[in-house]
Length: 337
View 1 (cartoon, rainbow, N blue to C red):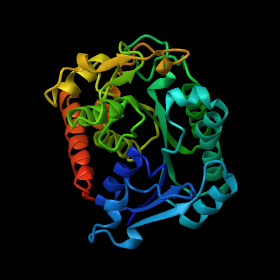
View 2 (view 1 turned 180 degrees about the vertical axis):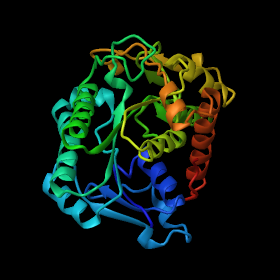
View 3 (view 1 turned 90 degrees about the horizontal axis):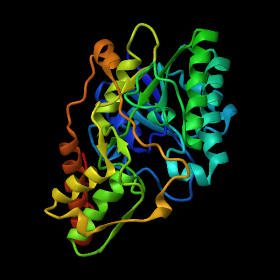
View 4 (view 1 turned 90 degrees about the vertical axis):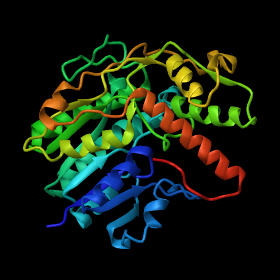
């Protein structure tokens, strides 16, 4: 029998890749979209334009994680087999400027969704998008057994959502799983996130449209993977007999400085000529190093990353160069992976 899935945050990087994956597996996908005065579905446009995607296979609904009643009504109407909660205010630096909004959407939004599932009495499996930012100041490597020490309102909100997911699993027997994903990037990454900010600047500098790139802490170390591979891990989590929590990561440590070096090198440029430090991009509380141990996911889910750090930076740089060239040519060609 055909499965049905609901994705919150479907218009984001992960949501669009997950929608592609589930559609390829024969799911009917329902996406929750916040009402806006402007279109914000560009990451999904290619799916709608694909003649192989019947209209009934991907259905978008106006809904919001701030409205628990509408969530309950929608879930009752759809009765999904799986729910993937990817909706959040997910920019760490922005969370310091908008802590209440971040706490409401990222933290309370998850609780509203869990309560909507409980109140509606539907039998479904829930995936909660947890984050490596929950570990914060705890030294790496970080695994499922590592204690949390968040260093931002975003990290705190994700910890709140994580423990509510565990609580609903233990209290109500709900199939609810946390995927603790470390940084994962792609050409669909939002332009304000540091990796995409870098690769977009590389394309513009190469084209003579930009002179400098200003960044914050260049020594911050992260574990960067490829987003399409990470959504595969999400799906695998909900196919297990019992719900559990999993870290998803590459286990490879790279600094922002190294990302700059490889991204600029992919375009034949010397990063040191163009990158400048600007303290305004620093966080009030910095997270120095996040490096994941995904051995549990490899053992129990059969998942492990394949795209290397060098390949990731090359993919993103080439996509931004091609996208910029298409824009300058007045073309509407979509370029990403």
